[in-house]
Length: 169
Image 1 (cartoon, rainbow, N blue to C red):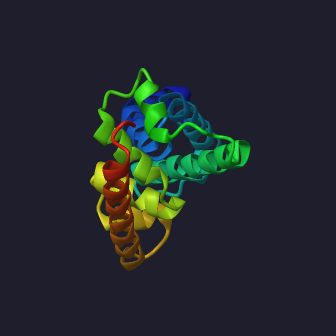
Image 2: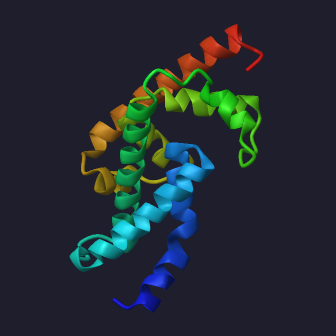
Image 3: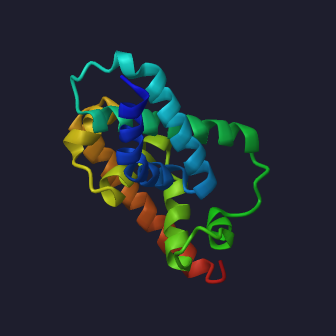
């Protein structure tokens, strides 16, 4: 593949991949870093792309894996030292254009285990079908549906508990 061909892929997929990554990692700057790593990884491995799936599915798989790796590194780096809630960090972020309710939703999503968070964001925000998510995450549609419904329940409980007890975010 030539540099020009790959540049076209970058142009075509940068925005949709950015938003998939952003829904997982939340922070704008982190999403940009993960997006860059996604394209570096794709460029290094483009010869391994076997076209058994769509190019977009292959790129989304790389992006999701990079996003999850990023979250693991951040969790290890921060440990329990992070005293500012995600909602407060989002509200202070110049790139976040939501309100307190949206920040609380993002905080609830951030509390989910990685797989549930990923399934929820891909299905809810990106409106991906379970069959597509199944290819990206290499798991069954039944497992994905179960993860999604558990995630919805946990998010609902989190939002109800935190909106009733903390109205000052």
